[in-house]
Image 1 (tube, helix red, strand yellow):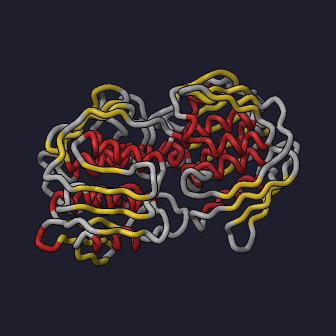
Image 2 (tube, rainbow, N blue to C red):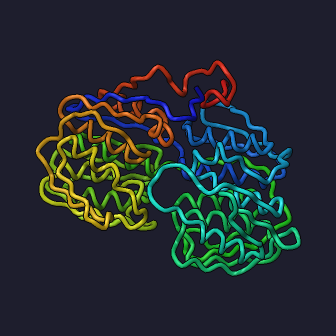
Image 3 (cartoon, one colour):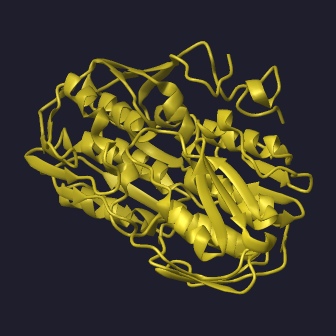
Amino acid sequence: MNVLDRLDTTLRVVGGARLEGSVEVQGAKNAALPIMAAALLARGKVTLHRVPRITDVSVMWSLLEALGARLSLQDRNTITIDAANVNKARAPYTLVRKLAASFDLCGPLLGRFGRAEVPLPGGCVLGTRATDLHEAAFRALDAEVSVAHGYLIANARGGRLRGGEIEFRMPSVGATKNAMLAAVTADGDTIIHNAAMEPEVVDLANFLVAMGAKIEGQGGDTLRVTGVAELRGVEYEIIPDRIATGTLLIAGAITRGDVTVKKTRPDDVLALQLALGECGVKVTTGDDWVRVQADTVKGGTDVVTAPHPGFATDLQPQLLSFLCTAPGVSVVEESIFNARFSYVNELVRMGADVRVAMDNNTALVKGVAQLSGAPVEAPDIRAGAALVLAGLGASGETEIIGLEYIDRGYERLEETLSSLGAQVQRASGIVPFSEPTGTFETSVYPSV
Protein backbone atom coordinates (compact mmCIF):
# COMPACT_ATOMS: atom_id res chain seq x y z
CA MET A 1 0.00 0.00 0.00
CA ASN A 2 1.26 3.49 -0.85
CA VAL A 3 1.96 5.42 2.36
CA LEU A 4 0.39 8.48 0.78
CA ASP A 5 -2.99 6.73 1.00
CA ARG A 6 -5.07 6.56 4.19
CA LEU A 7 -3.82 4.05 6.73
CA ASP A 8 -5.41 2.98 10.00
CA THR A 9 -2.35 4.00 11.95
CA THR A 10 -2.73 4.96 15.59
CA LEU A 11 -0.94 6.85 18.30
CA ARG A 12 -1.13 5.76 21.93
CA VAL A 13 -0.78 8.50 24.53
CA VAL A 14 -0.58 7.86 28.27
CA GLY A 15 -1.46 11.09 30.06
CA GLY A 16 -0.26 12.47 33.35
CA ALA A 17 3.38 13.25 32.55
CA ARG A 18 4.52 16.85 33.08
CA LEU A 19 6.51 17.90 30.01
CA GLU A 20 9.86 19.54 30.69
CA GLY A 21 12.85 20.49 28.60
CA SER A 22 13.67 22.13 25.28
CA VAL A 23 13.25 21.12 21.64
CA GLU A 24 14.10 22.58 18.25
CA VAL A 25 11.19 23.14 15.91
CA GLN A 26 10.92 21.91 12.32
CA GLY A 27 10.85 24.04 9.18
CA ALA A 28 7.49 25.48 8.20
CA LYS A 29 5.22 23.15 6.24
CA ASN A 30 3.14 26.03 4.90
CA ALA A 31 6.25 27.80 3.62
CA ALA A 32 8.04 24.74 2.24
CA LEU A 33 5.17 23.63 0.00
CA PRO A 34 4.67 26.86 -2.03
CA ILE A 35 8.43 27.38 -2.19
CA MET A 36 8.84 23.90 -3.67
CA ALA A 37 6.16 24.81 -6.22
CA ALA A 38 7.92 28.11 -6.95
CA ALA A 39 11.08 26.20 -7.88
CA LEU A 40 9.32 25.43 -11.19
CA LEU A 41 10.12 29.01 -12.21
CA ALA A 42 13.88 28.70 -11.68
CA ARG A 43 16.37 28.45 -14.52
CA GLY A 44 18.79 26.44 -12.43
CA LYS A 45 18.85 24.16 -9.42
CA VAL A 46 17.14 25.16 -6.18
CA THR A 47 18.46 23.82 -2.87
CA LEU A 48 16.17 24.12 0.13
CA HIS A 49 17.25 23.67 3.74
CA ARG A 50 15.06 22.90 6.76
CA VAL A 51 12.41 21.14 4.71
CA PRO A 52 10.24 19.11 7.14
CA ARG A 53 10.08 15.36 6.58
CA ILE A 54 6.32 15.10 6.42
CA THR A 55 3.96 13.40 4.02
CA ASP A 56 2.59 16.67 2.60
CA VAL A 57 6.11 17.43 1.39
CA SER A 58 6.30 13.95 -0.14
CA VAL A 59 3.10 14.61 -2.09
CA MET A 60 4.50 17.88 -3.45
CA TRP A 61 7.73 16.02 -4.29
CA SER A 62 5.72 13.49 -6.30
CA LEU A 63 3.74 16.24 -8.02
CA LEU A 64 6.90 18.01 -9.15
CA GLU A 65 8.35 14.71 -10.39
CA ALA A 66 5.12 14.00 -12.29
CA LEU A 67 5.57 17.33 -14.07
CA GLY A 68 9.13 16.40 -15.08
CA ALA A 69 11.27 17.92 -12.30
CA ARG A 70 14.19 16.05 -10.79
CA LEU A 71 14.48 16.03 -7.00
CA SER A 72 17.14 14.68 -4.69
CA LEU A 73 17.64 14.51 -0.95
CA GLN A 74 20.98 15.96 0.20
CA ASP A 75 20.55 15.24 3.89
CA ARG A 76 17.63 14.70 6.27
CA ASN A 77 16.09 18.12 5.72
CA THR A 78 17.78 19.45 2.57
CA ILE A 79 16.45 18.85 -0.93
CA THR A 80 17.48 19.94 -4.42
CA ILE A 81 14.98 20.62 -7.21
CA ASP A 82 15.96 20.81 -10.87
CA ALA A 83 13.00 21.94 -12.99
CA ALA A 84 14.89 22.16 -16.29
CA ASN A 85 12.98 19.24 -17.83
CA VAL A 86 9.50 20.19 -16.71
CA ASN A 87 7.32 19.96 -19.79
CA LYS A 88 3.75 19.62 -18.51
CA ALA A 89 1.24 22.25 -17.46
CA ARG A 90 -1.36 19.77 -16.19
CA ALA A 91 -1.12 18.43 -12.63
CA PRO A 92 -2.40 14.88 -11.97
CA TYR A 93 -5.60 14.58 -9.94
CA THR A 94 -4.46 11.42 -8.15
CA LEU A 95 -1.86 13.47 -6.26
CA VAL A 96 -3.58 16.87 -6.10
CA ARG A 97 -6.58 15.36 -4.29
CA LYS A 98 -4.31 14.60 -1.33
CA LEU A 99 -3.01 18.12 -0.78
CA ALA A 100 -4.72 21.52 -0.73
CA ALA A 101 -1.34 23.24 -1.18
CA SER A 102 -0.97 21.56 -4.58
CA PHE A 103 -3.11 24.42 -5.87
CA ASP A 104 0.04 26.54 -5.42
CA LEU A 105 1.17 24.99 -8.71
CA CYS A 106 -1.28 27.17 -10.66
CA GLY A 107 0.80 30.36 -10.47
CA PRO A 108 4.18 28.84 -11.41
CA LEU A 109 2.74 26.78 -14.27
CA LEU A 110 0.85 29.76 -15.63
CA GLY A 111 3.93 31.95 -15.33
CA ARG A 112 6.22 29.39 -16.98
CA PHE A 113 4.01 27.99 -19.75
CA GLY A 114 1.28 30.60 -20.11
CA ARG A 115 -1.13 27.78 -19.25
CA ALA A 116 -2.09 25.84 -16.15
CA GLU A 117 -4.51 22.97 -15.57
CA VAL A 118 -4.78 22.07 -11.89
CA PRO A 119 -7.55 20.06 -10.18
CA LEU A 120 -9.56 21.90 -7.56
CA PRO A 121 -7.90 21.62 -4.13
CA GLY A 122 -8.08 18.57 -1.88
CA GLY A 123 -6.51 17.85 1.51
CA CYS A 124 -8.20 18.24 4.90
CA VAL A 125 -11.95 18.86 4.97
CA LEU A 126 -12.11 22.12 6.92
CA GLY A 127 -14.91 23.78 5.00
CA THR A 128 -15.39 25.54 1.70
CA ARG A 129 -12.19 26.17 -0.26
CA ALA A 130 -13.33 28.64 -2.91
CA THR A 131 -11.05 29.42 -5.84
CA ASP A 132 -12.77 32.63 -6.93
CA LEU A 133 -10.02 34.88 -5.55
CA HIS A 134 -7.36 32.87 -7.43
CA GLU A 135 -9.41 33.14 -10.61
CA ALA A 136 -9.88 36.89 -10.22
CA ALA A 137 -6.13 37.34 -9.71
CA PHE A 138 -5.29 35.41 -12.88
CA ARG A 139 -7.87 37.38 -14.88
CA ALA A 140 -6.33 40.62 -13.61
CA LEU A 141 -3.06 39.36 -15.11
CA ASP A 142 -4.76 38.98 -18.52
CA ALA A 143 -5.50 35.25 -18.38
CA GLU A 144 -8.64 33.47 -19.51
CA VAL A 145 -9.90 31.27 -16.68
CA SER A 146 -12.49 28.52 -16.57
CA VAL A 147 -13.43 25.53 -14.42
CA ALA A 148 -14.22 22.31 -16.26
CA HIS A 149 -14.36 18.65 -15.23
CA GLY A 150 -12.97 19.47 -11.78
CA TYR A 151 -9.97 21.41 -13.11
CA LEU A 152 -9.14 25.09 -13.02
CA ILE A 153 -7.84 25.97 -16.49
CA ALA A 154 -6.00 29.24 -17.06
CA ASN A 155 -4.49 30.52 -20.30
CA ALA A 156 -2.47 33.72 -20.72
CA ARG A 157 -3.74 35.77 -23.64
CA GLY A 158 -0.98 35.88 -26.22
CA GLY A 159 0.95 33.24 -24.31
CA ARG A 160 2.35 35.57 -21.61
CA LEU A 161 0.82 37.22 -18.56
CA ARG A 162 0.67 41.00 -18.17
CA GLY A 163 0.93 42.96 -14.96
CA GLY A 164 -2.29 44.28 -13.50
CA GLU A 165 -4.03 45.51 -10.37
CA ILE A 166 -5.45 42.88 -8.03
CA GLU A 167 -7.81 43.81 -5.20
CA PHE A 168 -8.81 40.95 -2.91
CA ARG A 169 -12.11 41.43 -1.05
CA MET A 170 -10.50 39.63 1.88
CA PRO A 171 -6.93 38.54 2.66
CA SER A 172 -6.34 35.07 1.21
CA VAL A 173 -3.10 33.20 1.80
CA GLY A 174 -3.58 30.89 -1.17
CA ALA A 175 -4.67 33.58 -3.62
CA THR A 176 -1.87 35.94 -2.53
CA LYS A 177 0.70 33.20 -3.12
CA ASN A 178 -0.67 32.33 -6.55
CA ALA A 179 -0.91 36.00 -7.55
CA MET A 180 2.76 36.54 -6.65
CA LEU A 181 3.88 33.33 -8.31
CA ALA A 182 2.13 34.28 -11.55
CA ALA A 183 3.14 37.95 -11.49
CA VAL A 184 6.90 37.60 -10.96
CA THR A 185 7.52 36.75 -14.62
CA ALA A 186 4.62 38.71 -16.13
CA ASP A 187 5.21 41.74 -18.34
CA GLY A 188 5.04 44.98 -16.36
CA ASP A 189 4.00 45.85 -12.83
CA THR A 190 1.40 44.17 -10.62
CA ILE A 191 -0.14 45.68 -7.49
CA ILE A 192 -1.78 43.27 -5.01
CA HIS A 193 -4.12 45.01 -2.56
CA ASN A 194 -5.39 43.42 0.68
CA ALA A 195 -2.65 40.80 0.45
CA ALA A 196 -2.25 38.16 3.13
CA MET A 197 0.51 39.00 5.63
CA GLU A 198 1.21 35.52 7.04
CA PRO A 199 4.90 34.73 7.67
CA GLU A 200 4.75 31.92 5.11
CA VAL A 201 3.62 34.38 2.42
CA VAL A 202 6.51 36.66 3.37
CA ASP A 203 8.91 33.71 3.19
CA LEU A 204 7.68 32.85 -0.30
CA ALA A 205 8.20 36.47 -1.38
CA ASN A 206 11.71 36.47 0.11
CA PHE A 207 12.51 33.22 -1.69
CA LEU A 208 11.34 34.67 -5.00
CA VAL A 209 13.45 37.79 -4.41
CA ALA A 210 16.46 35.55 -3.73
CA MET A 211 15.83 34.01 -7.18
CA GLY A 212 15.85 37.46 -8.79
CA ALA A 213 12.20 38.53 -8.55
CA LYS A 214 11.34 42.16 -7.84
CA ILE A 215 8.81 42.35 -5.00
CA GLU A 216 8.21 45.21 -2.59
CA GLY A 217 5.99 45.48 0.48
CA GLN A 218 6.20 41.92 1.83
CA GLY A 219 4.83 41.78 5.34
CA GLY A 220 2.29 44.50 4.53
CA ASP A 221 -1.13 44.39 2.91
CA THR A 222 0.01 45.84 -0.43
CA LEU A 223 2.55 44.13 -2.66
CA ARG A 224 4.19 45.56 -5.76
CA VAL A 225 5.64 43.05 -8.21
CA THR A 226 7.70 44.03 -11.25
CA GLY A 227 7.95 41.18 -13.71
CA VAL A 228 11.36 39.84 -14.76
CA ALA A 229 12.36 37.75 -17.74
CA GLU A 230 13.56 34.77 -15.72
CA LEU A 231 14.49 33.57 -12.25
CA ARG A 232 17.70 31.81 -11.25
CA GLY A 233 18.45 28.87 -9.02
CA VAL A 234 19.22 29.60 -5.38
CA GLU A 235 20.06 28.07 -1.99
CA TYR A 236 17.51 28.97 0.69
CA GLU A 237 16.48 28.05 4.25
CA ILE A 238 12.79 27.67 5.15
CA ILE A 239 11.53 29.64 8.17
CA PRO A 240 10.59 27.86 11.43
CA ASP A 241 7.11 26.37 11.65
CA ARG A 242 4.99 28.66 13.84
CA ILE A 243 2.15 26.12 14.05
CA ALA A 244 4.48 23.35 15.24
CA THR A 245 5.98 25.89 17.65
CA GLY A 246 2.55 26.73 19.03
CA THR A 247 1.56 23.06 19.28
CA LEU A 248 4.62 22.28 21.40
CA LEU A 249 4.06 25.31 23.62
CA ILE A 250 0.46 24.26 24.22
CA ALA A 251 1.70 20.74 25.00
CA GLY A 252 3.72 22.29 27.79
CA ALA A 253 0.73 24.28 29.01
CA ILE A 254 -1.80 21.43 28.99
CA THR A 255 0.55 19.24 31.06
CA ARG A 256 1.31 22.15 33.42
CA GLY A 257 4.90 21.78 32.33
CA ASP A 258 7.97 23.85 31.52
CA VAL A 259 8.80 23.71 27.80
CA THR A 260 11.15 25.80 25.66
CA VAL A 261 10.91 25.76 21.87
CA LYS A 262 14.19 26.77 20.23
CA LYS A 263 15.22 27.93 16.74
CA THR A 264 11.85 29.57 16.23
CA ARG A 265 10.56 33.12 15.76
CA PRO A 266 8.67 34.41 18.83
CA ASP A 267 6.87 37.21 16.99
CA ASP A 268 5.19 34.64 14.72
CA VAL A 269 3.28 33.21 17.72
CA LEU A 270 2.61 36.45 19.57
CA ALA A 271 -1.18 36.01 19.54
CA LEU A 272 -0.78 32.58 21.17
CA GLN A 273 1.59 34.02 23.77
CA LEU A 274 -1.04 36.60 24.70
CA ALA A 275 -3.81 33.99 24.94
CA LEU A 276 -1.75 31.70 27.17
CA GLY A 277 -0.69 34.65 29.30
CA GLU A 278 -4.35 35.56 29.86
CA CYS A 279 -4.84 32.04 31.26
CA GLY A 280 -2.04 32.52 33.78
CA VAL A 281 0.70 30.68 31.89
CA LYS A 282 4.08 32.38 32.22
CA VAL A 283 5.57 33.04 28.78
CA THR A 284 9.11 34.31 28.24
CA THR A 285 11.00 34.81 24.98
CA GLY A 286 14.46 35.38 23.56
CA ASP A 287 15.77 36.10 20.08
CA ASP A 288 14.93 32.61 18.78
CA TRP A 289 13.10 30.81 21.62
CA VAL A 290 9.83 30.78 23.54
CA ARG A 291 9.33 29.24 26.99
CA VAL A 292 6.07 28.38 28.75
CA GLN A 293 5.83 27.64 32.48
CA ALA A 294 2.35 26.46 33.40
CA ASP A 295 2.58 25.57 37.07
CA THR A 296 -0.57 27.63 37.66
CA VAL A 297 -3.39 28.03 35.16
CA LYS A 298 -5.81 30.61 36.56
CA GLY A 299 -8.61 30.51 34.01
CA GLY A 300 -9.64 30.44 30.39
CA THR A 301 -9.78 33.12 27.71
CA ASP A 302 -11.74 34.15 24.63
CA VAL A 303 -10.16 34.00 21.17
CA VAL A 304 -11.27 34.73 17.62
CA THR A 305 -9.24 33.31 14.74
CA ALA A 306 -8.14 35.89 12.20
CA PRO A 307 -5.60 36.44 9.43
CA HIS A 308 -2.07 37.19 10.64
CA PRO A 309 -1.17 38.87 12.96
CA GLY A 310 -4.39 37.62 14.58
CA PHE A 311 -4.82 34.23 16.22
CA ALA A 312 -3.99 31.50 13.70
CA THR A 313 -6.83 29.17 12.69
CA ASP A 314 -4.28 26.32 12.56
CA LEU A 315 -3.72 26.71 16.33
CA GLN A 316 -7.40 26.90 17.22
CA PRO A 317 -7.97 23.16 17.87
CA GLN A 318 -4.82 22.86 20.00
CA LEU A 319 -5.71 25.88 22.14
CA LEU A 320 -9.28 24.64 22.57
CA SER A 321 -7.92 21.33 23.93
CA PHE A 322 -5.94 23.30 26.51
CA LEU A 323 -8.96 25.45 27.40
CA CYS A 324 -10.90 22.25 28.14
CA THR A 325 -8.56 21.87 31.14
CA ALA A 326 -8.52 25.54 32.20
CA PRO A 327 -10.84 26.73 35.02
CA GLY A 328 -13.90 28.75 34.06
CA VAL A 329 -15.55 29.43 30.72
CA SER A 330 -13.86 30.24 27.41
CA VAL A 331 -15.28 31.16 24.01
CA VAL A 332 -13.52 30.21 20.78
CA GLU A 333 -14.79 31.75 17.54
CA GLU A 334 -13.64 30.43 14.15
CA SER A 335 -13.73 33.06 11.39
CA ILE A 336 -11.64 31.38 8.68
CA PHE A 337 -13.04 27.89 7.99
CA ASN A 338 -16.69 26.92 8.32
CA ALA A 339 -16.16 23.28 9.35
CA ARG A 340 -13.21 23.53 11.71
CA PHE A 341 -15.00 22.24 14.84
CA SER A 342 -15.53 18.72 13.50
CA TYR A 343 -13.13 17.37 16.14
CA VAL A 344 -15.11 18.63 19.14
CA ASN A 345 -17.16 15.42 19.50
CA GLU A 346 -13.89 13.52 19.97
CA LEU A 347 -12.92 15.81 22.85
CA VAL A 348 -16.37 15.28 24.37
CA ARG A 349 -15.63 11.53 24.32
CA MET A 350 -12.68 12.38 26.57
CA GLY A 351 -14.89 14.20 29.06
CA ALA A 352 -14.60 17.73 27.70
CA ASP A 353 -17.49 20.14 28.17
CA VAL A 354 -17.74 21.91 24.81
CA ARG A 355 -20.80 23.11 22.96
CA VAL A 356 -20.68 24.35 19.38
CA ALA A 357 -23.25 26.97 18.38
CA MET A 358 -25.74 26.22 15.64
CA ASP A 359 -23.85 28.51 13.27
CA ASN A 360 -20.89 26.10 13.70
CA ASN A 361 -18.53 29.06 14.13
CA THR A 362 -18.40 29.43 17.93
CA ALA A 363 -17.57 26.98 20.71
CA LEU A 364 -18.37 27.47 24.40
CA VAL A 365 -15.77 25.69 26.54
CA LYS A 366 -16.22 24.95 30.24
CA GLY A 367 -13.04 23.74 31.89
CA VAL A 368 -13.14 20.37 33.62
CA ALA A 369 -10.96 19.10 36.42
CA GLN A 370 -9.60 16.21 34.35
CA LEU A 371 -10.00 14.78 30.87
CA SER A 372 -10.01 10.99 30.57
CA GLY A 373 -8.34 8.84 27.96
CA ALA A 374 -10.54 7.36 25.23
CA PRO A 375 -10.31 6.03 21.66
CA VAL A 376 -10.68 9.00 19.29
CA GLU A 377 -10.21 9.74 15.60
CA ALA A 378 -8.32 12.63 14.01
CA PRO A 379 -10.31 14.29 11.19
CA ASP A 380 -7.47 16.55 9.99
CA ILE A 381 -3.88 17.61 10.73
CA ARG A 382 -4.41 20.22 13.44
CA ALA A 383 -7.36 18.46 15.06
CA GLY A 384 -5.16 15.37 15.25
CA ALA A 385 -2.51 17.37 17.08
CA ALA A 386 -5.22 18.75 19.40
CA LEU A 387 -6.28 15.21 20.32
CA VAL A 388 -2.68 14.28 21.06
CA LEU A 389 -2.45 17.28 23.41
CA ALA A 390 -5.75 16.32 25.04
CA GLY A 391 -4.33 12.84 25.61
CA LEU A 392 -1.24 14.32 27.26
CA GLY A 393 -3.47 16.21 29.68
CA ALA A 394 -5.86 13.33 30.35
CA SER A 395 -5.81 10.50 32.84
CA GLY A 396 -5.28 7.04 31.40
CA GLU A 397 -4.57 6.04 27.82
CA THR A 398 -5.82 7.74 24.66
CA GLU A 399 -5.67 5.90 21.35
CA ILE A 400 -5.80 8.24 18.36
CA ILE A 401 -6.81 6.78 15.01
CA GLY A 402 -5.66 8.72 11.97
CA LEU A 403 -1.97 9.18 12.65
CA GLU A 404 -1.49 9.63 8.91
CA TYR A 405 -3.11 13.07 9.23
CA ILE A 406 -0.65 14.10 11.95
CA ASP A 407 2.25 12.88 9.80
CA ARG A 408 1.14 15.31 7.10
CA GLY A 409 2.09 18.30 9.23
CA TYR A 410 4.43 17.20 12.01
CA GLU A 411 7.85 15.59 11.72
CA ARG A 412 7.83 12.62 14.11
CA LEU A 413 5.67 14.37 16.68
CA GLU A 414 5.77 11.36 19.00
CA GLU A 415 9.57 11.49 19.20
CA THR A 416 9.59 15.22 19.89
CA LEU A 417 7.05 14.87 22.69
CA SER A 418 8.83 11.83 24.12
CA SER A 419 12.04 13.85 24.39
CA LEU A 420 10.11 16.17 26.73
CA GLY A 421 8.96 13.28 28.91
CA ALA A 422 5.65 12.34 27.28
CA GLN A 423 4.53 8.72 27.03
CA VAL A 424 3.62 8.55 23.34
CA GLN A 425 3.99 5.54 21.08
CA ARG A 426 3.30 4.94 17.41
CA ALA A 427 1.16 1.81 17.14
CA SER A 428 1.50 0.88 13.50
CA GLY A 429 3.54 -1.52 11.46
CA ILE A 430 4.51 1.32 9.13
CA VAL A 431 7.16 3.83 10.19
CA PRO A 432 6.97 6.46 7.43
CA PHE A 433 10.41 7.99 7.90
CA SER A 434 12.54 4.85 8.23
CA GLU A 435 14.96 3.96 5.48
CA PRO A 436 12.73 2.90 2.58
CA THR A 437 13.10 -0.24 0.57
CA GLY A 438 11.38 1.00 -2.56
CA THR A 439 11.14 4.12 -4.68
CA PHE A 440 9.73 7.48 -3.70
CA GLU A 441 6.30 6.37 -4.83
CA THR A 442 6.16 3.76 -2.06
CA SER A 443 7.97 5.64 0.68
CA VAL A 444 7.86 9.09 2.17
CA TYR A 445 11.42 9.98 1.21
CA PRO A 446 14.13 8.27 -0.83
CA SER A 447 17.16 7.09 1.10
CA VAL A 448 20.06 9.51 1.44
